[in-house]
Image (cartoon, rainbow, N blue to C red; front, side, top):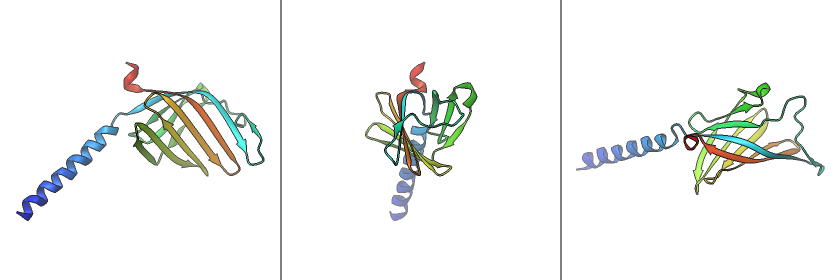
Length: 138
């Protein structure tokens, strides 16, 4: 009896894990940036300092690949940021990662709002925009 219950328990766990993996399979969002602001540690507020690089306009967040890929402008197309954490909580998707000493977090709500933050030593960038699930654009 114990052996049978163990087999059933293992089967349930495997099925649950497979279902969770399938829930993320293929989920990605096309995101557009509407506004962005930077706040420095001295209280200065203004546009993010990108140096000589163009400001991103569109990007894709891919839950399965755990990455954010810039789509526009053309000069930045294909730049990839790895995301270590992918979670769904209360109908919104939360992604986070670390790149070059910066923390990157993205929240995408079920109604298509997108908030992205980049935190570095002495500065926080807040980016706001919209997100469309790839399967919803068909």
